[in-house]
Image 1: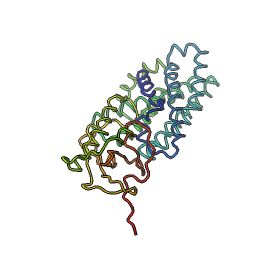
Image 2: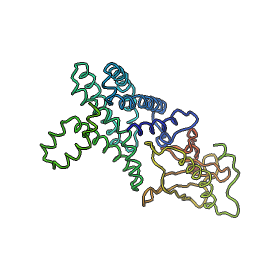
Image 3: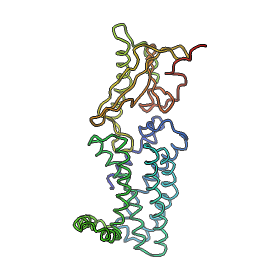
Image 4: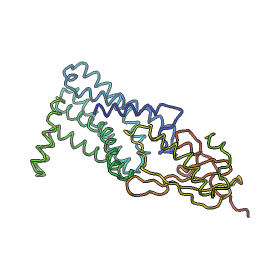
Length: 218
Length: 133
């Protein structure tokens, strides 16, 4: 995930080259509110460059042991996410290629980030660390969509899928999959699996992958 | 943009008009586009480059626009998997000047915009002159 974040950061510098339009902007032309959209894009990119690596850091055991530092980095990250990343993402989502269905995917992801960030902050203030961890797992899961979605786009292109279809698949699968994964890691997915009677073997297999990650998250 | 505009008439006597337009679009637009795509990061939400592009000149004769300049319409098809997708780029070429324009939304802009240069919409290009009543 850290490697993915680094790749995204490296490929984002093109958005600050004022002499050249990046391909992501060109394919959106003509934009209804071009100036607002461009500002939102740059705010979103800068906010993501700060917030995503910070989230990765906050999930590490090393930083969780240093409560004071964890709290301060968490506060800054929470402010960046709630007041820059999510609002700019909302503006960008309305011009997403693929139409309303894709816009809805981005809006859902943004709503999950904002909702769980607020829940997580409130839980931390109440010293409810279990609830805080669950909420922040959801925030991190949705932020990880930036990486998984791009990786999936790359894979689906290699498989020869039409880019329009691939864009929808590579958005919705990671958004829903990440939310499910966060629940799984938070423990409540276990009950859901038992209720719906899915094969235990599948669950155990997922748990064997998830367990080490949960341990890191503690 | 300037590079595209300062090229003298590209339709030589040896070439048929569609062949000349096709070559012009390939040389001035598609080859630089491919070169540009090789430089860019693939870890982006921008559409990944197609595996192949082909130019179709959709007119055999020129049309005159409102400024009485002659143009020829073209389209670029792309292939991602096995299927070709038509009209990925739609535009027109002005044989006298070599200028290329592409359609983005409802408006035409200089083709250089696809290469990352800023280009404002060019009103009146690639549209036939209204018949005089």
